[in-house]
Image (cartoon, rainbow over all chains, first blue to last red; front, side):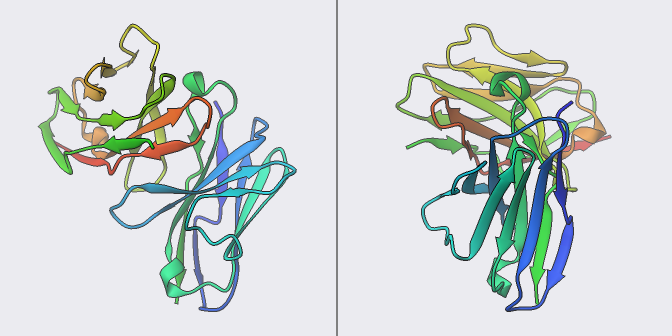
Length: 117
Length: 114
């Protein structure tokens, strides 16, 4: 089945530093990937839609200069949290679909738990 | 705007019994899709079942079935013969066909007891 690999699974960084999170589709090509953020005991909130070869589309209220998204190939999208602060601590998760959504749903990565200290 | 509502923050069920998790939605679009995902404590999101707005029959996948009532705008998940491994958060989500992105409900935490 379709697999999306997300790395790292956990990261702790110092305030002011940047962190890069990778999302890879292992056995399919994904022209579009999605990045979500989830606070503890809350739902997933879509941050941005990552499009291969073009600029990402950010949801309202998401700072594009804070959360840099690069979708350089059909199998890799990266999310960089720049100048991270404690309020950026959260669970970040990506998703993609290998084909028809109604057949496969969206496949999610295993998520990245970011802690900024 | 799309909206998904899950009114049950938590549900309890005994092993081997059936349980229904509620989901209502709001959209002005005619074409849309409804999803259910399971999120164990590890954090991964597991796709369970999909229902298209034009599907006349309720979707089923093994022990999961979706009770789709279009006029009421509800898409409840029914889990039959609950197992201990079913304990997790369950999210209902909707996608408008033209946009691809998912909008999630607030989730229901299901606990299955022996």
